[in-house]
Length: 317
Image 1 (cartoon, rainbow, N blue to C red):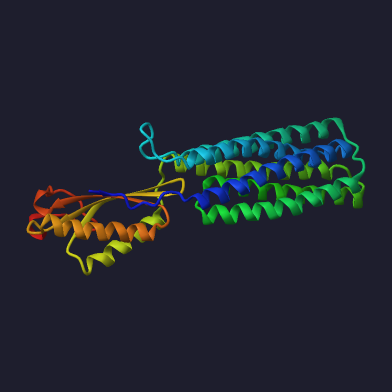
Image 2 (cartoon, rainbow, N blue to C red; image 1 turned 90 degrees about the vertical axis):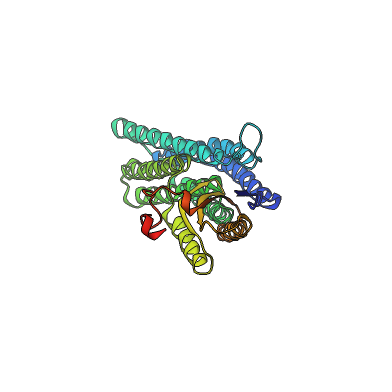
C-alpha cells in the first residue's frame, strides 16, 4: 500500500532559494571583476588564485540556478520519482569546477617560483581582498542557513564553496601582509599553494557528497530515528516490520517498509495501522517525506526470512 502523504515543495521555499541563488550570482560576478582587477594590478599569485576560484564559482552558480529549477519540477510521465537528483549533479559539477581552479592555482604558483615575481600596489590588493572577504562571508552564511533549513543540496554546496572563497581571501590578506611586513615576495606563491590545497579539499568533499546522493547512500542517523519510532508504535500496535529501506533524494526522504500482521487481522485494521505508521514517519521526516508500505500476513513469510533483530521460525510466529 502506498499513501500520498508527502507534501509538495511549497512555492515560498522555492522562491526563497531562487532569490538567494540569484543574489549569489550577482555577487559572484561583481567580485570576479573586482578580483581580476586586483590580481592584474598587483601581479599577486594569491590574488590570482582568489580570482580563479571566483570564476569557477560563477560558472557553478549558473549551473546551480538551472539545477534548482529542475530539482523542484514535479514528477511527470518520464520521471516518476521527480527531479530531485538534479541537485546532486549540480553540487558535483561545482566540486569539479573548483577542483580545476585549484589545479590552475598550483600551476600559477609553480610558474612564479620558476620565473620570479614582483608584487605591486599591495595596499590596493589588501583592500580589495578585505571587501571580498566581508561580502562573501555574509553571502556564504546566508546560503548555508537557508540550505540547511530547506534541505537543499544546491544551496549547501554553494554556501560551502563561498565559505571556501572566504578562507582563500583571508589567505590572500595574510600573504599580502607578510610580503609588506617582511619584504619577502615568496610568501605570495606559498600561501597560494595552501589556498589551492584547501580549495581542492572542498571540491573533493562536494564531489563525494554528490556521488553519495546519486548512489542513494545510507543515512544511519535518519534510519535510527525511523526504527526508534517504529519500536515505539509497536508497543501499542500489533505488527512487525522488515525490509526497511530509506534514501534521501534532494530535499525528499523516501521510505519503503513491509508491515507484517497476524493472520486474523482484517485488511481494514491493518490499513488503519499502516496509515498511522505512514503519517508518523512523514511527520518525523517533515516537510518532505514519501512512504510506501506493503502489508503481509505472518503465515505468508518464509521461515528463513530475517526480521528486524530476530529470525523467524515456526516457533516464534
